[in-house]
Length: 318
Image (cartoon, rainbow, N blue to C red; front, top):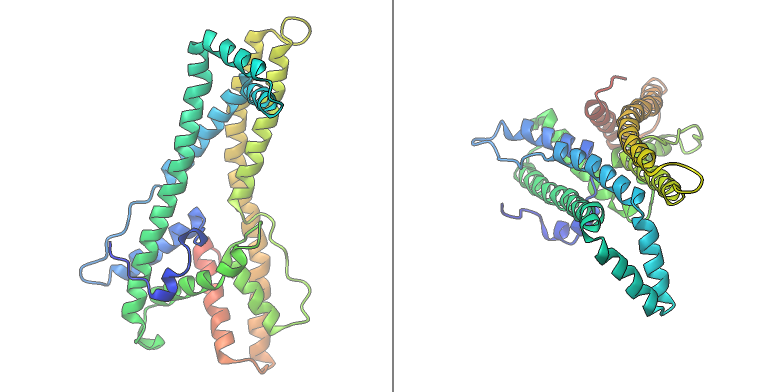
């Protein structure tokens, strides 16, 4: 597909377009609705979201296997030996692993290869999909830039607003570790413009799926390492090795169940937090009309566009 971005858009590194899966779905949905009216309709890349979500669960399994079979301990001992120049220790660790190469192949090398492949696939497939959707969106916007707003469909207006706010949000994406939805970030900015003294804008803590994924991975690494510790002492004090591996399997299944439950909990809490923010936006919009506040028409129009985009994207009503 040809690159229809302008020179200014090409200057923006692609890595800054770090859209979430929900944002990608929203962009794809807008592009479908707009391109249907074109003749012929514009082709869009196939969504690989379900495959990426499935591979993340595979990653959890691979991490559990590695942590429960002493790999973190081996990697730590090898690193310490290399740092202190203990080459005899390095040779000894390598020799032990060569003696048990079938087990090393099954429990270490294969999980590592699967983990590396899945992480690379998740990253590059999402980046490629994002780039293609961006090119399609830029092409549609370029063809409609000379048309007045009244001549555009609501889907086209939403698409232009989505792209505009996303690009304006790139600046804070570079610096903020806990990135929130750029549309929500813009809504907060608009509310502060309308009422600079407002202090009751809620902080959204559950709006990021990546936060749930990071915590579930950290939890599995910790619990897997604990099981590894139990296995090391199976002969003297704690658990038989068979029970330890059974506990490892239960851990991995439990982590997957907890992760799937957390996904639903995160979506529910994110909608509750967003509902509070949208309620404030609705109150400000009504107050500005009732009290005839001296606000620019562009500001009021953008507030309406932002609220509409968020309600449509998250399937909510105000």
